[in-house]
Length: 138
Image (cartoon, rainbow, N blue to C red; front, top):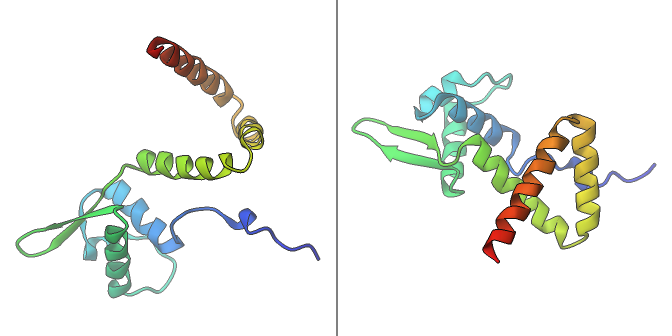
């Protein structure tokens, strides 16, 4: 039986519960730990203390801001979902570029074409825009 590639299991820099908490905060904005706990549509049996621990961990990672109020602490996302996705994808791309830039680009275009062919036009326009921007700097 072939071994499963570790890269094949990569899906997110966050654990499942961390991602669920972030999804809640992105949708709801600033929330108390209890609000996050109550509002999560988790199919698992978790405790309030677990959610608070995850929020603290996300704050230490710089992904969540903590704002102390008079009677509670509000947690809010430090980055929008789009900013987070961009940061993560840039980190992944930088790592792969160190291995093979042509392999990364070919894989990216193939994946984009398979998932949403219309996005190829947007990518082409972005590339042309970046080329013009770089030319203007010369």
